[in-house]
Image (cartoon, rainbow, N blue to C red; front, side, top):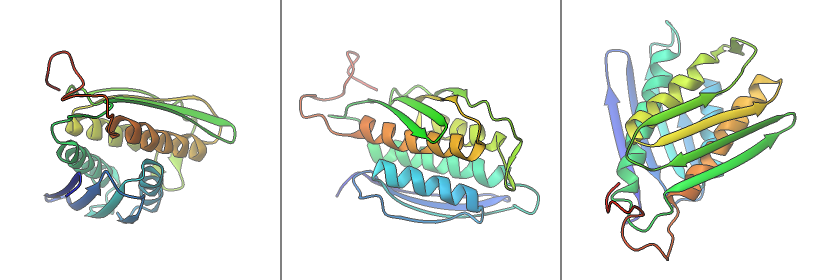
Length: 195
């Protein structure tokens, strides 16, 4: 059966369908019509070892905002659904990823409480035709809809592409750790008995 989810969302601005398997091998089929976002989602899946299918269309003739945010919403919902009741998981995950001159870190708590701490000091407003402010919008939407606490930071770097890429890889690695089973955990990893 596995820990899988399928989430669809259709609005006047976007049409999104996501399939997520937390116990996959990193296979991905991603088409959002935004090449940079496709690239980042592919990295997330590969480093998290999640099977991920994303089909997204949106009003990118206006800008990329609605599509990027709605992909984050759907991925967050898929993660929440796939992780289920959270029995027997590690709950926390952390990763530091270097990429050339950049170093990014992500720290996750599958807490049931949505919160984002985001620190990515990008010098440029764009990477190609992608607005760099949309990286935060993506992670905010994901954290809110997955109900996770997420700290995402680039400690340093000068190349915007490298900084964002390191952040997505770190997110994949940290999430993989957080959702991984821990054979020593009985039930939910919380003294409250619920997450």
